[in-house]
Amino acid sequence: MSADGVVLVLNAGSSSLKVAAFEGERRMLRCVIEGIGTKPSARAQGAAGEALTGPVLDPAPATPSEALSALLGWIDERLGGRPLSAIGHRVVHGGLDHAGPVLMTPALLAELEALLPMAPLHQPHNLGPIRVMLASAPELPQVACFDTAFHRTVPEAEQAFALPLAMFRRGIRRFGFHGLSYDFIASALPALSPRLAEGRTVVAHLGNGASACALRGGVSVATTMGFTALDGLPMGTRCGALDAGGVLHLLNQEGMTVDAVQDLLYRRSGVLGLSDGFSSDFRDLLASNTPEAAFAVDVFCRRVAQQICTLAGALGGLDGIVFTAGVGENAAEIRARIVGQLAWLGLELSEAANKRNAPRIAGGRSKVEILVIPTDEEAVIARQVREVRMQVGHARLMGRH
Ligand code: ADP
Image (cartoon, rainbow, N blue to C red; front, side, top):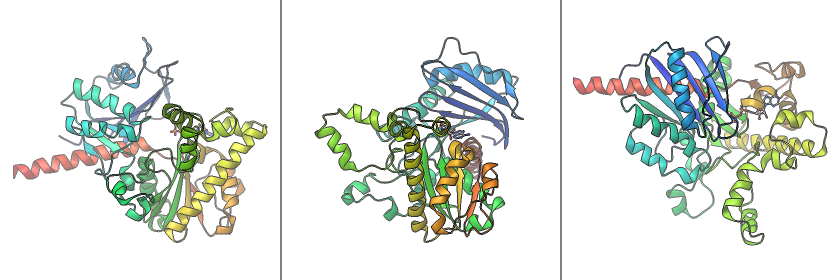
């Protein structure tokens, strides 16, 4: 398999499908289909970020896999019939065995299907398009790129919950997620700040899903998400860290069913729940002057600041923090509140730079660098596909000699 040609990147969620096409490092186009299952709509951009007419969604797709066929026709047209040479898929959970991207096979698909209970709201959607493509284009190389893989470097003592050791051994442990985003940030740091690339950096990925990661020399050594993508920071609709006793109480004393608790923790909690059901979107929360919206923002900022301290503890100090993802890249007020709570660690913000969403937002007297870096998970997936293809090509070459 050669390393040239057009690589398609697929990121399938519960109600969305994000797609990008790359030629080497160049992004040729991207398309986001949202509202799948309710009111699907598509947005598309060309290589220079210009708006394109997206695919026609008729009949309306009910699942991301159904959206895929409409999308493949559209991409084929846009690429002028140039064939795809490989597909890279975002897969949330790679389990214990995958510390990097892997070439998809039917056996690997079965292995990843066994992980469905560990990422019930993400993994089924990630695997749907893989199954479709393995069946419809078995000759096309497909690569699974895992959100967990980047964190396989975390020391075992950081991965462990204080449960019986046998459970740790069989995989009830902190895996961590958002690894493709952290991989992007780690690979962007050398050019932006050699000190942070080599030193102790906490990255706060604050989007709909939110987590933070401690990097030492660009390698993950601790992270806030856990066995599932529910742990750690409060999120748009997910609860973040929670006393397990609270869950037992809901089940045993309040008589909630397991399904109802799952729905509560994944879909009705986080800042949506804290704002009394008002919104999971920080733009709405920041624009509102209700006490409930203010309360949700307050809890969120406190937890993020506290978790950054915990991760600084795991690193034994802090050289810099990086804000990324939708909230981290755009919400100056949220960054200011978080940094304000970290002043005792020597952080100081340049208000003007922060308001501009500038790449460097630390004030002149800050002991800690503070960066804003837009993340790009698609670019990481495309790069990982190239790496796997080169490895496979190399192995074939070696086999021939
Ligand atoms: P996902 O986890 O779905 O990839 P993103 O990283 O795209 O999410 O983040 C989406 C969230 O970012 C939105 O729900 C919204 O709360 C937040 N966001 C985006 N732009 C802004 C902004 N200008 N101000 C505040 N929050 C924003």
